[in-house]
Length: 150
Image (tube, rainbow, N blue to C red; front, side, top):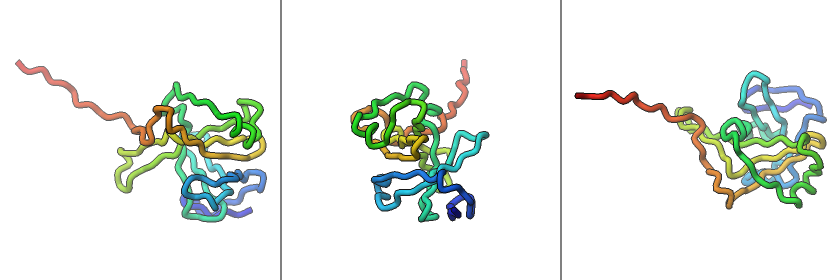
């Protein structure tokens, strides 16, 4: 199947690579089929709509940004996604890059995307009570060296 993408032009992918989000993503409920485009040499990837070329999300593993990231996947979501083993789960977080200001990029740790890699089914969780930020700075602030004066 050929998919027109926002960042990679037209790509050829097997139908078995399609990820299905039965409820879509918040704000994109009618767009339910995506592909996960990633390179082994980058922490960043792209979750690209199969039907809307302009709908693409830069994503990253939240564990890269926050190594102690942890949340409970409600049993109802586990059942909906058919998750039976932790090894079947891919967790992603959406990256937001303000136009012309990549240094101000943030990661949404409050709404992870959870994908069952075995059956290719996904959903976005909203962890509003988790304490995780909606906009976690991706890049650490550079600090100015302190100059001692006499």
